[in-house]
Image (cartoon, rainbow, N blue to C red; front, side, top):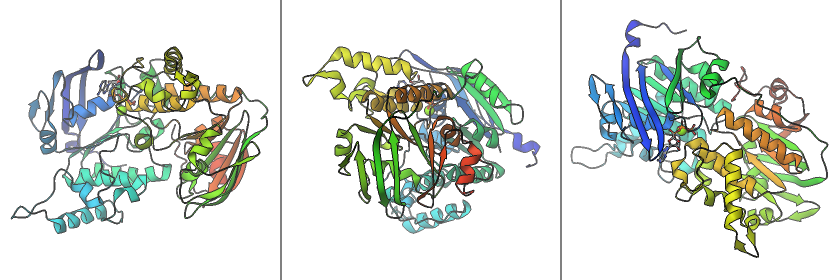
Length: 509
Ligand SMILES: Nc1ncnc2c1ncn2[C@@H]1O[C@H](COP(=O)(O)OP(=O)(O)OP(=O)(O)O)[C@@H](O)[C@H]1O
Ligand SMILES: [Mg+2]
């Protein structure tokens, strides 16, 4: 344990009575909040509770309707981005604000490029600085590469390096691990601990309760725009957090009702993608949930997109029923297979379209008669999915950008469920989704397979896998190393992966 010195408890930032509405939505209703130097202060809360809105107010992206922010002895009615920056605040957003086609260096310094005396951009200086920051983070990476050539974890590190490049004293992180595997998350935790020990103040938003219990010094739970409770490390446990989040005792998360699997719906043979995985094969039957799990470096994450034909480097055979299908997304989709992509922030939503439009783009067939779209069907389909997935606000006509991050995830999920495929590939379906909605998604998975759908689930959440799957395929080093039956525990899965899992089995639930 790190000794707590009295000066490290000094207040870094505080807010009083912060309120913020978007039209009729009261996103924040009076937030009194204190952040100390040298602490990781976690914010938890259901989707739409107001966490991101609060962070955006601190970073100057939104102006509050009421209340004040005190920082460095000054009290402000609102911050704009440059005042926030000058006050030492830096933000790593839920939806990446980085530029995929620019280099690491350009991304780190975008918005505050270093110029030399004659006003020219000083690339040498910026490269040196970037190198220094990554050295401090203990990571080595190609600084001149475009971001789109790097994996998600590395991109996340670039976001952190950017925060550090502004000499930030206060770092706001909005779900930084949502897209990371558990061992990628480990690297991030190391870095967060180091930043904290260096006296930085960190706000850390996450839906992963175990993760928060581990790295937070203080935990604040948001509920419907208010603070439901604050506790110090050691005072809060899982039950307390969930109770504060949802205002009641947690329900059972997994409710699978099992049935005997029916005929084989889809078979994948000798699927390879160079450098990722080699000659992988699996099948899925009616009424079955097959999980593919893997750990860092095991290459499992790309298997589903390759089997859906969206990986140009992949080769192999996909059979739907008994027929071989071209390894092309349109051909595979035509045969009744759907894919929920993992990188939903990038590939998922059409932000300027309404929620309803987003949900029907893939299922025009189910809501039209002789090619004519049926408004009544569209409306009832969207309303039904809103209800089943607890999407809030419950207004299907709003444009997607008016929904919180987790609710946007649910809208993408809704799209693929609305299309009612025979086989559904799900990549990390509960990433960024709160615990209440997660229960609903698990219930939905159960009801879909009971109606005969076959589901292939790729997930790094081992609790989710153990709770849902009929069969578990464990990948190690790019191959399927073991197959486990329903009833296998998280420990069994870790064991089957040759102990490549993080040793204390960080669960992401
Ligand atoms: N730009 C916007 N326009 C309209 N409504 C918005 C906007 N941004 C947020 N809201 C609404 O404000 C409320 C709080 O959203 P916020 O994004 O802060 O939630 P959150 O706690 O971060 O949720 P999540 O866990 O899903 O990311 C939600 O009801 C959301 O729909
Ligand atoms: Mg959010």
